[in-house]
Amino acid sequence: QLYDTPYEDWETAGEDPGVPTSRESRLPRDDERPADEYDQPWEWKKDHISRAFAVQFESPERSPSLSRQLPRTPRPSAGTRAGCPPSPRHVDTSLPLEKQAWYHGPIGRAGAETLLALCREGSFLVRDCETSPDDYSLSLRSSHGFVHVKLTRTREQHFVLGRAGAAFPSVPEAVRHYTARALPVRGARHLSLLYPVAVQPL
Image (tube, rainbow, N blue to C red):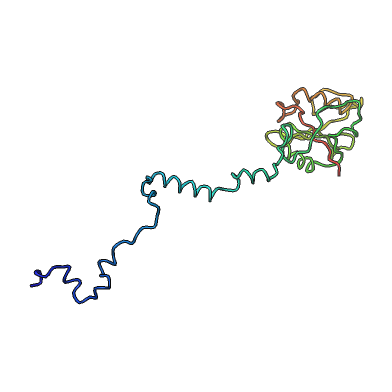
């Protein structure tokens, strides 16, 4: 007898005709979306959604309006490195040593290395010799670190760089000579005096 009763009659038996059946309540409601949305392929909608998220999460660095507001950091020139003070390139031999911009006086070896550490290979300065008050020292930045060479005063009041260098009537003459020639010094034979490190005013 169970299978002789139709399913529809058995499901609605004893229910109020005005109340929708459980089957009718499970039917989908009317879709309120525009009808033309069903005609749009999924690929188009997916691309549209991707572009919307890309605009929403775009980084501030790529925003044209923001990039115009941010100031640009000036780049260092080709002759200097960040932190390296600007330096004169011409050696005027008519000026005495005390007037030369690359003469730093009694700064010592450690002070010279602190200044040269900010500069590129081939940068140099001249300072007072720490062990001999009548002589001077040439401090140079090389690819392997720092080179310190004594400028020794001769009996004729000339100056010799190192032990076997030529004699020059003044320290500026010696510096100008080695701006165009390699230094006769071990550890710096491939280098010239390229970038004078000037004294910075306080």
